[in-house]
Length: 199
Length: 269
Image (cartoon, rainbow over all chains, first blue to last red; front, side, top):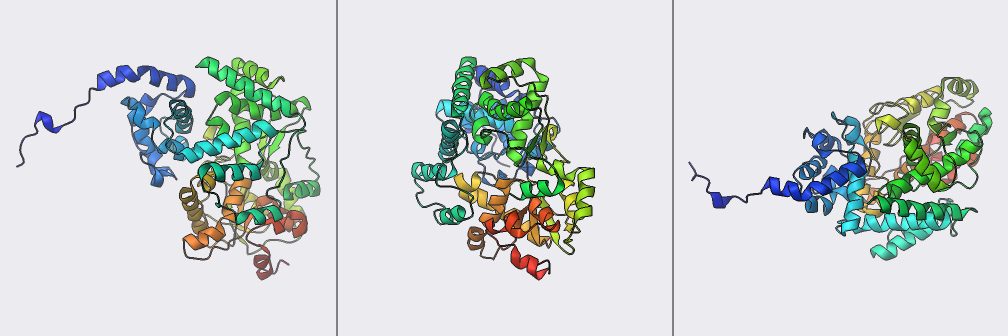
């Protein structure tokens, strides 16, 4: 028989105080995503079928559990929320219809705002992608990949594929701009303004 | 390319949406929910103004368009907000179809079957649907675990659609660019699943899935120390070929894994 567990052996967490602090955060998540973390009863089906689970630091199920427990910082600084590919295998199989991809999206936005982005490359790529759409109305793939390689420090990544993609007409050297580019730029401006207002 | 050629052959009139814009894909819906609705809504509104439904050749664009259409149909508030952001009225009266749905409809399928000149007999095809054509369920065009639309199309060409485990797996989309080892594992597992079930080739219905599965085989061969050489088609290429359209017109030269050796071995050429 081992010795009896002493009080000092354990790190005690006061769940009720964590809950109070995180209440605003969680209600904002519920408002923005339409997903309530307390709908989840931790069956784990999401995590069993997740195609990116092998690379995650927390299983999708654990992300929800951490939200239930108010562990905001751990959730926002996790790699998991950036690794989610949004394939919705979890949501399609969830017995309680918890829209995990939508929740992950909202958590990414929160992570951006709190400066806790764990996978900076994904954020860099998304920012450059949107900048390209804002500028041209469509994505200029060549510019996007060159910009991404420079910003992520992987200068030579996929360089060998460049000529092969060019000759196959998969990418072009110049952007395809749409004529009415102003209308797309105004969509970006107003969407930023209105989403900002909501916060 | 192959979609246009096939539509012409079947008398389906396709019109490119004038001045269409990019839907923003996951970059938009991971950044700003309203932007993610407004970008695809502009394209839909442009088509709606011409009284046209929209046929979408990409799984992600399809999903984003259908998502905003549903949201606008459900809520007047969303409709007003989206319309004001895009400076156009959008009522979500027009429909959104994936290109697969256009060709997998019963009458079109009969038309295809009647027009087959070069049956793909003996061709074992792993039909790959990926994620966003079949998930989430409320936006899906087919069953979420065992979809059949592409399988029916391949069957009508005389080919053999296979039952296999990678049908609705995710290729990782942009992960092959941003999170290399993660993306490569996802792509490699799908290719191996196709090989394990004895597939001669893969047929898919999304340009990004196509690029991931086709273009990364060289790199994956080095990573997994085995040779991947399985041709990957956008499904309209296979339909077009069976209908007698030339490989050149269908864009076979744009492939990274050349499909011609396979077709020669099968005596189709």
